[in-house]
Length: 555
Image (tube, rainbow, N blue to C red; front, side, top):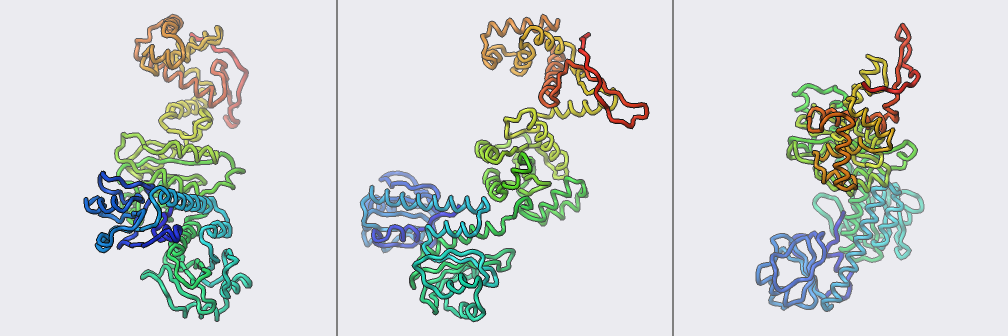
């Protein structure tokens, strides 16, 4: 997000401004608008302060001004003795408005700018056309706006009816500028420019219009020029600052990456692919590769994969916008794309702490674009990226089927299911069975059959009870039943299985067996009480085929 400047505020407020005292550096106001009070601590440099002359004078005399650049808008004229010796880090605007009208006036203009800026940012990161971007920009920058490439060929343009300019007319008519016109532009005498050559402002000799030009570079080379032509021959610092903001957004749009080929650096993208595909295992080579990359990871990291639901919808996904939002949610991370999914390597300060982030904002993005995010376990070594990456992949695959209502999936919530899946694969090869009833203990099968016969929920009660460390009060609350009912059900469970739940080994087996039931029911969509026997032909060449179904009779 770009921020409004004092020059913008002065221009917007027009004739209400009496005097404008510019400090040595530009204040960056992103913390809101505050009314100054007689008493208080240091002024916060991120806030725009509004105050009466007496209160502003008192604050300055008390040394309440921050060491950083600060902006104050005053409802009236300050004493001349005060304004003569204003601190260098203070930018002061004196107005002829009283306090309340002044506050309302400032709030109105700032709010309008913030809405304009937010909508402009949305257009940039949702891949709108450059024509639409310039059209929106012209609602605040009332001027002819031209975007041309390094060869002065038109990329996009929006014409302001009140601006008559021969250079703009030639470009809009032909789509490019002639050699003579380009040579004339290079002869223009600058009114304002910077040492880096990022912008130049001049009065056109041909039309007399004040022209602002921002050079847009990519990797040190000139890529485009943004030209703002005013219907005036006088400088306008407000439009200068707005043009700089627009140039920054256009640069983001043109060079932040395209579709799924996005990466914050080609070196990092290549490193990720080489690590995951196990082409990079030598420690010395890894160290050399890391020297080329500004890696957010200090010691520990956690991988996160973001994917989207189906191919038809994926083509309309604004990748640049989504990646930009992810960078805000996870500021200390490296982001790239790998095999059509967004991969984040997120910094952690310690291995054991939970990953802290704005889950609500992430969920909102995923809901809107029908996406899912999966988070693998933390690791200390980048050479461990392959297993933790595949953890996230497995969490995506399992979680989207078992818990489709969840948008953020953690591998730890599905690690049991991966273990069960490995067992299922082994069972298919060794005993020719797709049914994992043999992994469950007899007790949970007995409870399951009791529930089916009597329409009860002892299996769910048992799992909730064990999950809550056998706390009957918590379990009853979780199941929305009375505690006495809870005690009765526990007694019934122990009666059916013929053993006390005080046995810790039994509890471990019951918990694991419950996860087997979940895997079969929610992932495989099969009834564990129906035994499927698979058989191979003698030569073992044919795939395993399901046979007739039989009821399992527990021992």
